[in-house]
Amino acid sequence: MKLLVTGGAGFIGSNFIRYWLKNHSEDSIVNLDALTYAGNLENLSAVEKNPHYSFIKGDITDPEKVDQAMNEVDWVVHFAAESHVDRSITGPAAFVKTNIIGTEVLLDVALKHNVKRFHHVSTDEVFGALELDSTDKFNETTPYDPRSPYSASKAGSDHLVRAYYHTYQLPITITNCSNNFGPYHHPEKIIPLAITNLLENKKVPIYGDGLHVRDWLYVEDHCRAIDRVLADGKIGETYCIGGLTHDINNLEVVKKIIALMGKDESLIEFVKDRPGHDRRYAIDWSKIKNELGWEPKYDFDTWLGKTIEWFKEHESWWRNVKSGEYREYYEKQYSNS
Ligand code: NAD
Ligand code: DAU
Image (cartoon, rainbow, N blue to C red; front, side, top):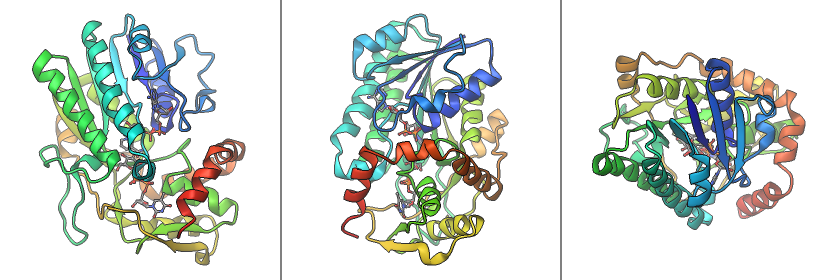
């Protein structure tokens, strides 16, 4: 089997490539990635010499590059995206370009090459926000209600993927997953931001009142879920993927990290809220459990601890990521707090 992975130099894509080559050593992977600020080939140093792995630097909005990358490919696993909500608020255009137009280019080329599967990696954010004091959860029938430029662009991409199934019978599957954490997570996101700031004895910025709730999943569980959907998922279907946390808010997450690292809660700093900040996400993952036998196996507290250890052991990785463009981004993002 030959897979084209888009966005394989990012956080989840690189974890997926390492996971796949370990668990499906007979398969080969082509990684197409534009190496934006979020793409980092260091994430793949463990596999760069593997003869079953190759890398093409290219943009998913470039039909010729995509055509070249999709040559003789059986399955496409599409991760490439602009992924950070805060950046989508200050610059939505890149999100429309990559997440919507890029997905459309990939779908067109996938049709031309008759790929056997186009798997689209999407997010729970397309469903909008749940009330804080409810027990509601998102599932596959929840109506779309995206509220940030990021989630709106991911919703657009989901609709296009389904349209190519209904209109042209492209064999697609979609997963909508909750918040991932783990190794190689970009420090613009809250968990690695908190860990690396604390390692530098810097304050941890919490937006608004800190009571916003996310559903956390260790990244390898996400990779395992995509594996199950590729193997046995029904063509045209969507599967929601979520973790084992129960309504843990951002303040509780950061306090856990502080306790695990032996730091002081005085390092918490409340800053101005994210505009349109979604209050609560929670995922009902019973469909993928009942139909495909997947459930998360990594609990939050243990794997948060292991993630902290990973960041301690990979100081040069995150220090490199936090230099240059990141420093400018950080100063702009948190300057008016
Ligand atoms: P990331 O920002 O860490 O990585 C994105 C990768 O895509 C980078 O390597 C980047 O260089 C590449 N890329 C960006 N624009 C590109 C373009 N135009 N052409 C080619 N490559 C391009 O993102 P992530 O957190 O790993 O997320 C991966 C996917 O999973 C995204 O589609 C995201 O919407 C989805 N997702 C993420 C989460 C999460 O918690 N991080 C949860 C659910 C779904
Ligand atoms: O739900 C899945 C989504 O999870 C993915 O689709 C996105 O690609 C991914 O970035 C993530 O989005 P979030 O906006 O939930 O993740 P982020 O880490 O940016 O923020 C998590 C929560 O922490 C959110 O409520 C905002 C808050 N936050 C974030 C930052 C960066 C803070 O309080 N302070 C911060 O400095």
